[in-house]
Amino acid sequence: MHVNLTQTTDVQELIELAPIKTWSLIATMFGDLDHDEIRGKQVSAILEGTGVKSEALRVAVHRLRKDGWLVSTKSGREVIYSLSSEARAQTSAAYDRVYGPSSPFADGWEMVLSVDDLDPPSFNTAAVSIAKNIFLRPVGSEADKTGLVVERVQERVPDWFEDRLVPPDVRHIAQRVAAIAAQMPEGQHNRLLLLHRWRLLALRNQTWAHIDLFPDGPLARCHRAVSEYLSATPPLTSNQ
Image (tube, rainbow, N blue to C red):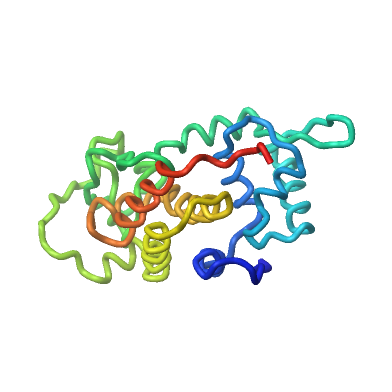
């Protein structure tokens, strides 16, 4: 992704923390818009300052249309884009994860030892694999009852366990995003980049399990900092 030299250091860091897929950034943008529809030139205006090149934008929009995530209509010589009904439903379903001030798994997580032939997806759709036959799952969730639930011991979690749950590089990203969110001024591309970095974390079950186990850890701090920033700044607007 090309970085505009006029961008602030924090914006550059948000871009460079890890590769950003343009189509995914656009999906984040559409999920945060204050209107259902947006003109093509307005998409470019919002993405200006995030490092997205025009060619990458065209390719990404084409992919999202092909995948049924975006729909388009013509208004004179302009193209108007909006989320498809399926994309809108998926975006709505993920709203609490991305924007909610508290964990979507309010009852916390528990450790389960499973039988040898138990397949994780059939075990629970939100289950997080730690090691062979060792999983974390949301408390109270519907799951295979053959697993043995292990009561959590209130002691320090070993480093290897934390690394299996969320790798160090992901925790580093969360730490930096939290620090940037605490000082980032209001701005369309500022909000978009912060939201995108958090959205990629929030959609992972591992993130919420880590927040439950480490309430003062980097992912929990990231959640709090980004939530405060989002609540204090207006959503992306198509009124350009």
